[in-house]
Length: 343
Image 1: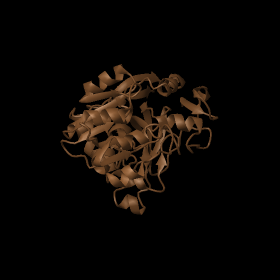
Image 2 (image 1 turned 135 degrees about the vertical axis):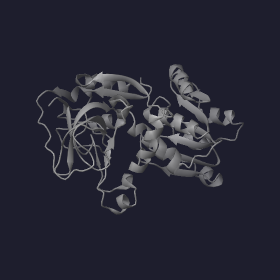
Image 3 (image 1 turned 45 degrees about the vertical axis):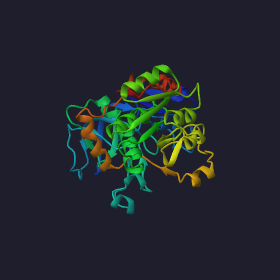
Image 4 (image 1 turned 180 degrees about the vertical axis):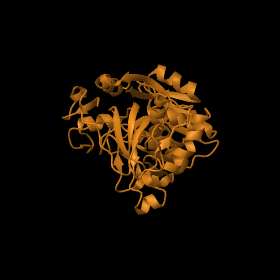
């Protein structure tokens, strides 16, 4: 099969476009998918570079969000059929542990991650277990599907499940041009919130406004915490959607109103954040972790996308053979929304 393969760790140049990589062989409870599109994420860059402890065995195929057609099924597969248009979950849980039995698959200690701990979607063919595969509605394109799960699954879990967002609250969303940021703006507006969004360029800020942001802040020109407090008459915001990490953490804490909360799902700029403990206990703040989404949450969000209430934001697509160029584009943070490979 055609695939983009990394046989060593390093920069985008280590991504090798190959036309004769061995086809995957499926087991009795697995599905073989002909991949049509694959969403890109910063985890792909970390995995390629071997950063933040992400070092799978080599050779390795990246790609968390693969959408395509079922071309073969194992003998014990019953949930999907050959010909179905499908989207496998990026995080594949065991289905048997305590957390899976409670419907909290995103806490499964035996979790596999497509493109990280097993081969992913930068390839023509992908083998995955049949658990929790989503069958795509006819209205959804492969590219939209490949831009859906990480963006809206993560944003929904952050705002709704973990952040307990309420109508009328003020939500500060960092990095509006990111996959999570562009989705979080839409989820917050769906719940009737006032949204303040940050980005690094005026062009991205205009796009954030088009998605529904009420106020925007260029964080390269001013401290976003001070501006957020000014925009709220000194009160601060109720909820911060944080996924940047060390570079923004201190300001994120400072931007909160009394009883405010931060929900974080990432650490792109580093995993250690400085926290003012006096603000933490004096203002009775909440620091909340969030990871991925459950199958139940994806099932909640999918109809909202089909109905057009939430819209995956696709910045641009690259053909599979240009995956290295797509990595450079993503690393330069030029995108607003999702970058997708077409296969």
